[in-house]
Image 1 (cartoon, rainbow, N blue to C red):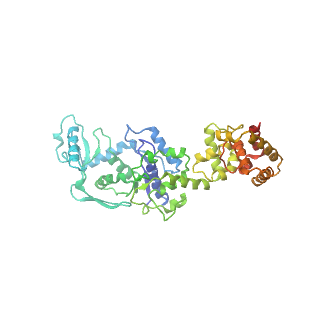
Image 2: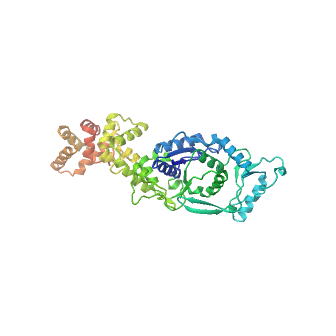
Image 3: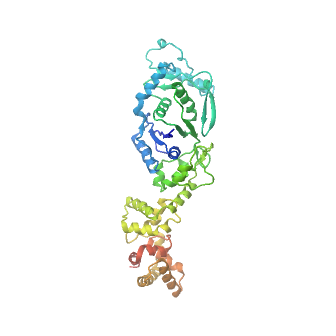
Length: 465
């Protein structure tokens, strides 16, 4: 059997963290078994579904590098097939037309609420003759749920759960306007697409028992179900925007690497021993449903920052330089090949303490900025008349040195400091202000080495003159 999984988002908003994790789990499960990972856009809510949200989902999956097989399926284009199945159930006697008025339905809901039960439809049209239908009422089609026995689901995460059929009401599968409901559409689409494993959030678990009624009445084999616990905030409450429940595009813009975010999402509710840093190839080989826990995972932005910092340090310097250059260019700062070369040479020091690409862009910006640099207020205070006079002397020493390397530059500056009985910091800080426009930077001798002789002397000259 070829394993087939799917990710089926509704395009009524952005691709959030929970949806991204669901997509990842489905992708990993299929890829690890040489199966197929499908994408289905459940856009049947025509009022709330938007092209912008659809594109955000597609872009988010692409940025996360979760490629799907074949073309994306749009559920709204399959309505004829959904109605066809509803009519089949109707002909087989497994569904019936319901002519309840809106007032009758409202009364049933009110009574169910008063009795503190979820089942509210009382089945009054289950066995009535359609000839008794009131005028002016377009019927819905409801499934004829068995009144005896029970429905059991052997869930790969939640375990075996059984629900008495009397607790499942005769739910609607086709609305009065002829549009299919989610309950019907998802079953028909999963069956037609050959989905073998339905891996989704456990907020869908109660739906599972209703959907199994449709599978069983049609004689279709059920897929394997795996309902994953939801993600909570670090305070244990339902995940919200204040916890970081934002669109995937936010994390891209905030400077997280897709590989790092995939790693973090993987560890939200799944474990493989004590492994924390799990590369994609290992994730594909190791991921299984047995490792998914039954308790909600907790979203912790600090852990994501820590993990992203690890991935930054492991990313090739040239690749990071290219990413930073593109961000700077988008901000209107010209980054040509020479600038990218500087960023690449300076990257080992830049990424040593950075947690995100945004932080890298901020601390590495001075390598790309044109002369003369605009100094921040702290740098300006460093460059008093005495400091500028010192920089004149240092500039002459640097211009005469033959060894323009990190070690060679440090030797010359230390010799100058010793000869003039000046603390090294009193020399380094004015240099840092002149060369970077700030009072914090990577080691200053490394900065000079990366900038090169001409740029270093030019920046000092701009300040001194």
